[in-house]
Amino acid sequence: MSEAFLERQCVTLGLGAEVFAVPVAFVREILDYSAPSALPEGPNYLLGLTDVRGRGTPTLDLRAKLGLPRVSPDLATRILVLDVPVDDRILALGLVADRVIEVATFEPSEIEAAPDIGVPWRSDYIKGVVRRDHGFVVIFDLPRLLTSQDAALIAQAA
Image (cartoon, rainbow, N blue to C red; front, top):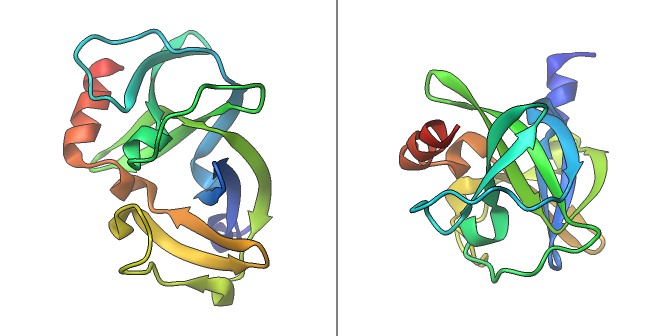
């Protein structure tokens, strides 16, 4: 499979009524939710460490990172374990999502530029958006979702 094709394949996930996507190339695995072990004095979006095959993986509450209200985990809640390139290294991290929907393939012609207004989160996190019958799918730019300060905190936690 070509690299260009893999870049167009995304795992879609839901946060409330909103649908987001992360490129499949960054997704290592998807886990059922279990509460991470808390870390003292971390930012509010850093839930703690999740045991992923014997390694402590920093886990972020994606809702809190985006400024959305928190919700209690339920049976559909998942942790996406990602390998995200940041600066000169690959950071392993977990992202908590309300639910994982599907693996979707987006044609380049379907992907529109990130909007500058009209969304409740910072548009610099967004690689693009795809129109669907039911609304939009927002594709994350994962390296930009994590600021250098976030990356330093996550690296320390790991």
